[in-house]
Image 1 (tube, rainbow, N blue to C red):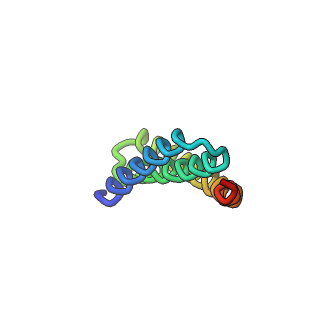
Image 2: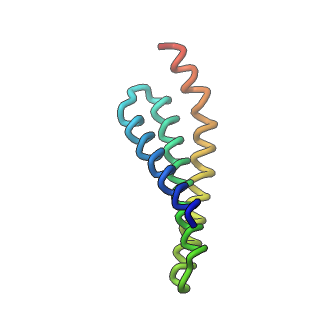
Length: 98
C-alpha cells in the first residue's frame, strides 16, 4: 500500500530528527520529553511496517512477523505517549527557569 509506505518514511524521518535533537539537548527533562516523541515516531514506524506486512502477506511467516511488529509498535506508541504526558510539565517548567 502506497499510503503505508509514505507513513513509514515520514515516521522514520521524524524518529531520526528527534533522536538527533535529543543528543544535542542538555536539559534533562527536555531531553526525556524529546526521547518520548522519538519513541512515538518509532511506534508509528513499527506499527505501519507491521500493517504493511499484514496487507501484503504471502505466507504464514509474513503474518507472524506483521502481527509481532504490530503489537510491538502499539506497545511502543502507548508507552511513548504516557512518557510524553509525564515529562511535558517538567520540560515546560525547566524551560521557564532557564
